[in-house]
Image (cartoon, rainbow, N blue to C red; front, top):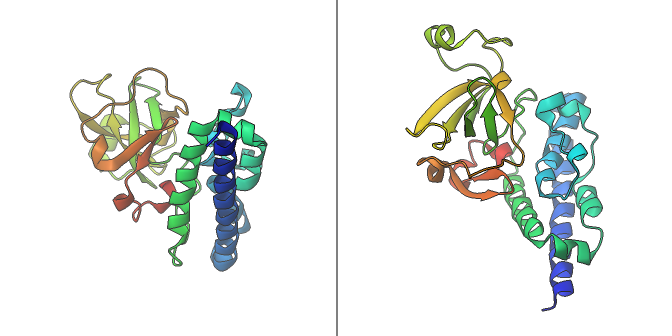
Length: 239
């Protein structure tokens, strides 16, 4: 198979999956519309598209992420349109084949979520980070990976008193994280407030390391750890 034909086959399969996923998203929005406010429905659509942005060739100006300004600052485009802009030709697809294959795998994972006809988006709009995101702690400087999110602090008042105060209070989202052993040699799992985590979309330096990573993740693709399938039932919007 020639290079151009590889790009063509990959592009067709990717766009086929993207179109099906866009259709599934529209169908779900129609099915659950009575339970979703209009604003919530729009943000859900944007979240679904944004998860694929990491696979695209883009300038620094386009690297702005929702945790900087919120999802409301991002214009909505369909997943198909997102890929159309990034891979307009078979040659462009061939030049970014690694990203294309990773995007195709991600599309397949999302389609599996939508195979469950009872699936309803449940992740709150103010939970801006995803399981598998790499971050740097704004106060302490260490890097790590998110393995769980909470809508508010799950710890008791003693922990809040010890590690607070928090500018946005204990009612903001919190995350359970694995701390990179390059920064803290002793394997360490910690709880962190959303206000203290800076998302790293394209982390530089060595890959995040922690002995528990294989328990949560199956792979590392384009700056993001991929949640294991057996855990996707608990956090389907992060898979």
